[in-house]
Amino acid sequence: MVFLTLSCWIRNRGPDRYWKVQEVLSNARHFRGRKNRCYSLAVRAVRRAFVYATKARKIKRRNMRTLWISRIAAASREHGMKYPALMHNLVKSSVEVNRRVLSDLAITEPKSFLSLAKLARARQQEGFGAALGDGKEPPGVFSRIVTLQ
Amino acid sequence: MSSFTKSAQQWATFARSWYLIDARMQPPGKIATMCAIRLQGKHKPIYHALSDVGDHVVVMNSRHIAFSGNKWEQKMYSSHTQYPGGFKQVTATQLHSKDPKAIVKLAVYGMLPRNLSRRTMMQRLHLFPEDDLPEDILLNLTEELPQPREIPRRLNEYSQEEREAFPTLWTPPEDYRRK
Image 1 (spheres, one colour):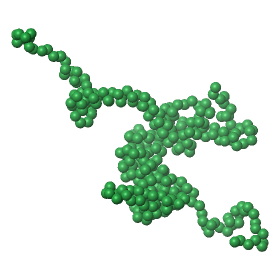
Image 2 (cartoon, helix red, strand yellow; image 1 turned 90 degrees about the vertical axis):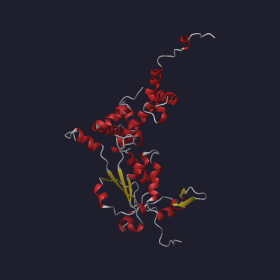
Image 3 (cartoon, one colour; image 1 turned 135 degrees about the horizontal axis):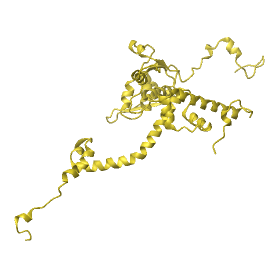
């Protein structure tokens, strides 16, 4: 027998188990069921949650873009244009406004958005005229802007 | 609008409107897409799926919808009572005679996103088989939407002058006999 006196039988475990457990449980407090109280269940749920959070950083950018696109589509339909026509004609008029700013304009600056929609509509009509007409120079200016390199 | 207070502007932006659609002689699918867009709120630049920005839609004359082609006889609506041998299939005509609102209701239900807000959006859809709407709904209506399909006129609805002014391809000779 190695431990011959009583004092040698005492084991000193780690002094900080409480704080190590709280480190995990504090991230699980808003979960449903026993996962927010019981450490073994919470550890697994917290790991899944962190994995979802890392994956979601890329998905958030995708979701934001689809939201901007649906908002711009709604606003352009209010002015009688469709989203693909609006974006294509803005690109052809070399207006490089991105979707985030366009959706913000549509919400907070409706008159500016209306003017952009009218610009796109004019460029669209000129495109139709150039395609269907007899190749004469139209009176407008939009189609004569330098095309993108 | 710039003279409104911020709270009044926000109240006006997020208010729920009531739209009216007349479904007489219209294809129910086109009616349903218009309804679904407005029930979700996708016609507003402030749209967000969680923001509950959908509006109310009132569809009248749903008894007088017009399917194109042979869909009245060929389109089948299926259901199951969950009992064995309980698979039921009815044609569009049979379903329409049993319940004149069911075709438009099922069409809109299938076009809404499959999440928990679908049931709330269906509660904001009001269907009426004829054009007699109750008083409280008539008081709420804000806008009538244009019909998606232009209703063609029957031959007897054209006046004699319009019939004569219509361009003809050829005029038959005097002794031409039609079969």
